[in-house]
Amino acid sequence: MLSWISYLGLAVTACIAATLLPMQSEAGLVALLYLDPSAVYGLVLAASIGNILGSQINWWLGRQLQRWQGRRWFPFKPIQLNRAQKWYQRYGRWSLLFSWVPIIGDPLTLVAGVLREPFWRFTLLVSIAKISRYSLLAYATVHVLNS
Image (cartoon, rainbow, N blue to C red; front, side):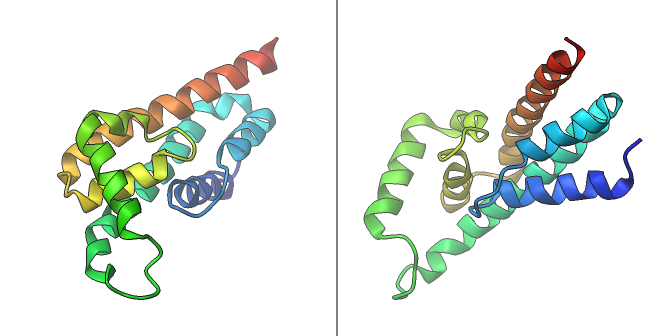
């Protein structure tokens, strides 16, 4: 049986992984499932909540981003922001269902904030993506462990 620290650690790792900081929460989920496969529902819930929260942080940062755009230290060039905005406008809010995809998912959640996607809609679409991602990973892991 896993302690509450395991669930909290997974949620924090998943939260950090959903921001623009590089981190992998999938390895933590698989390792914890290896230790206790019966904890699958709690682990998927902890990872999903943490990852959704991290995406919401990105959304909030996106809302604040344009305020700092003229600063010399600003990390994005105007052409990068323009390209990301055009991509999001082309594919629309439904592209948030791909927020789980490595490399493009985290910047996508940031751009949704820049373009002022309503928070409730953003959270709903990102939640569907993140819960599906961790559920499929957990199912595959438990299936392999039981083989």
